[in-house]
Image (tube, rainbow, N blue to C red; front, side, top):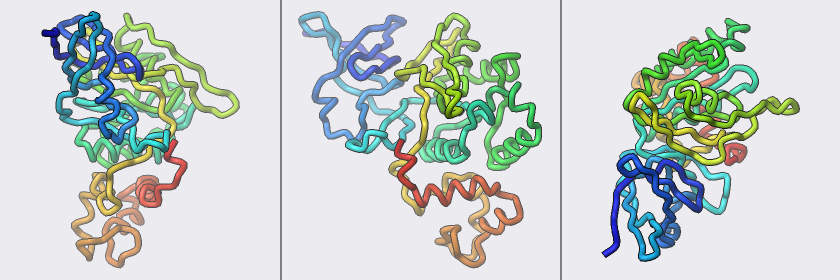
Length: 308
């Protein structure tokens, strides 16, 4: 009878998977039937998955099956032959790293990520990184805080350069499995290295011609933290296409719209054109940020550029 163990996937390269079992990392492949089992995702096994592995007669470990996920975060795949790409599973919280300069994180990206977190019930916090650069434009910082704190999210100013916010983030990650995500070049890997100095992660530079980051993390990986938590570092994401969210439900995942919608004249208001729409009135008053409402309209339109 072959040996069988249960563990957590800490790294997924597409060919090999690192599985953590009783403090030991074991390299595993996956059974072909998992890869071919009619899954709509480009990656059937993801970082954070709890899996059962068996050892064959040749001594090689194979992931035999995936245990039920309590949650996951997903986006539309850039490979259009498949429908989706799961970023990570079994997450306690998500930290979205954004920057107001070098590079600029687009509001649509932020809002699509947050909508996905709301849809899959993953608490999200925004880290305003490179704060030492952002502070040069205090009005932009104030407006950013007002937009997202007004929506109901916590925003933490963060600078790995001078230490701003680092201890706050360290406390947040203690004893929890945390997904760290954001565009390339916003400083995710630098933050990981600051939180856990023993981790040597590659950091990248900003492309001068496009003002965007270069990809430095190739595959998602989960790192143990000395405070008892785990941090999942992900490759930089250019866009965040939504999937499995019905147009009629999108506004449910904007907390400020969800709070306001009960005051609409019509129970089935789409918040786009109806008379007596409390949401649009709130946008006009400035109680709901225009950028957030614009993201809502763009999600409904769902143009092809977010497939990347």
